[in-house]
Amino acid sequence: MSTRAPFSLASLRLDRLTARMDEHDFELLTLAQLRQNAGHAPLPCRVHAQVDLHQEKKTSTGSPYFEIKLADAGGSLVWRVFDNNPVLAEARELRRGQFIQLSGNWVDGGKYGPEPRHPRLRPLTDDEAQDLLKGDAGLAERQRQDYAEIEAFMDSLADPRLRGLARLFLEKHGARFRRTAAARENHHARRGGLVEHVAQMMRAAAAIAGVYPMLNRDLLLAGVLFHDCGKLWENCYPESGFAMPYHLHGEMIGHIPLGMELVNKLWRELMDLPEAAEWAALEPASDLARLHLLHLIAAHHGELQYGSPVLPKTPEAVALHYVDNLDAKLEMLRRGYETSAEIGPGILERFRPWATHILEPLAAHTPPAPAPSEDARETA
Image (cartoon, helix red, strand yellow):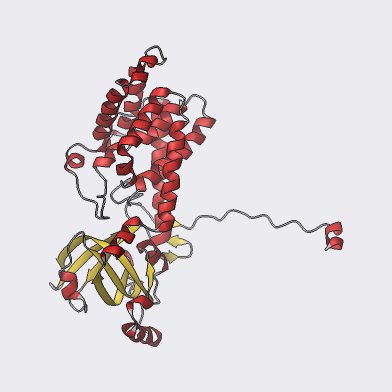
C-alpha cells in the first residue's frame, strides 16, 4: 500500500511556491523534529545532517537509485534518490562523512520516514558543521544533566573501592563515554545515548534498592555504570561525526568481554594507588568485590543465547538484567510513539525489532478540581 501524499491543488501550489523560496525561508529542523512533524501535507523545511551510508541499489524494474542514510545528534533517516530526482547527480557524488543541508517540501514516505519533494542539496560550511556537531540544545542539556547525575550517584557509594573505580573510569574515559551510543539501532542509538541509558538505569536501580533490602546498592549502581562500558570500543562515535564506525575490537571480542577486561585493568590501577593500602582489611575482601562486579557485566544480558557467558546468579545480577531490559524496551516504545504510523484508532504500526503493533498508552486520570466553597465564592 502506498504511503505517498495524495495529489491536491493546495500541495501543487505549495510546491511551486517552495521552488521560488530562498533556503533561509525554510525552517531548520533536527531529524527527530522532522519525523515528528512530517505528514501527508508537505512541510517546507531544511535539515543539517551527516551522510552515514551511501549505497547504489536497483528498483524491481532494474532502474538505479541511491539509498542515503542521514544522521544528526538525535536520530537518522533514509533518503531514497530515484532516477527522476532533480538532485540525482549531486546525490551520486555524496560520500560517507560529508555534512550537508537538504531542504524541500517534506512528506511522510512510509517505512523509510520523511522524504523531500523538490529537494535542494548543498554542503555545510565549516561553521554550520561545528554547530551541528554540538547537537540539539535540548538533547545536549539533558545529556549534560544525566552525566552530572551519574557522577553524583558514584560519589554516593559507601564502598571506597567501587567509588574509586568509578571515578577512575570517568576521569580516564569520560569524554569517550559522552559520545558513545547504547546500541547501533534498537535503543538510545545516538551520540551520547549510553549516558542517557546509564543515568536512567541508575535512577531505577536506586529506587529498587530502596525497596529490596537484600540488594547491595553500591554493587548494583557500580554494575549499572560498567555493564556496557565495553561499548566505548564497540558503539563509539568519532569526535567529529555522527557516522558510527565499526571497530575491530568490538567485532572480534564484543562489549561484554571488553567491559570485563577494562574493569580488570582499572582495578589493577586502583590497587596501585597509595590509598589502596587502607583497604586490605575491608570486608568483603577487595578481590571478592571485583569478582561480583565482573559477574554483573558478564550476566547482564540474562541468557546465554543473547550473549552472556553466564546466567545471573546473584540478586544484583538479576536486578541489573531486568533494569537494563526495562529501560531498553521503554526507550523503544518511546521512539515507536514518535515515528510509527497510526493504522487504526489507537493502534500504531509495528517497528523493528518490536514483535507486534503497539497501542497508544492510557492517559493518567486527572481528578476534577474541587468546587469552591461558599466562603471562597463570597470572597471572589
